[in-house]
Image 1 (cartoon, rainbow, N blue to C red):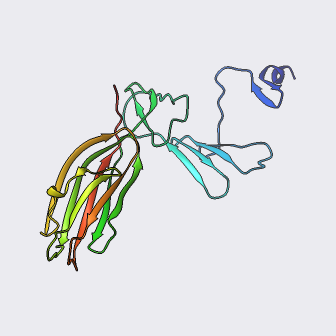
Image 2: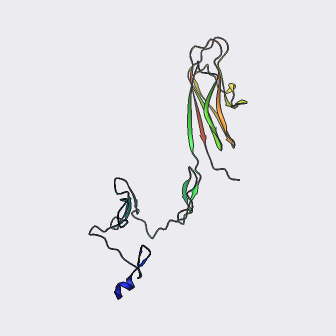
Length: 220
């Protein structure tokens, strides 16, 4: 027992190897599988040395594999953040392997189809804080054929219906594409509304309203 006493010891339920630089040799396929002694939950870690993989498995049907990239030179050390970040964050590096969470600019487009018989107020986009409205495009595909009073459209918010697009900037009686460069940052939450009047005598008319918005990181 003298040799084993010096090599192996127990600390609680933990096996301790008392020598420097232990080496665990797997099977002929160079795979080492680590699991709990009873394998009660079926979850395992498999380290496949010859393919440079670490594989996490639930022991049933799901696996997650981390694979070393081929090529390159030298060792790579990546230091993870000390927290789990916020929703929609991404991992960035400082170029030296230190990873941290960062906001990412999300660009999205919303499309609202406006018909001649739609209600006077249509919601174009729900209220969101920290939004940059880049541009608004109104594409008239079928003219609003008014007999007397022309159809009009404003795009804005409650209490300021033409904040972003005024009736003078879009002609609903002519087929065409109207682009309004907005570039307006909203620090608060505002619902975007399309305020529409069909005019008199309209029987047809279709337009698409396309909103281009993003959520940039704003610094002082």
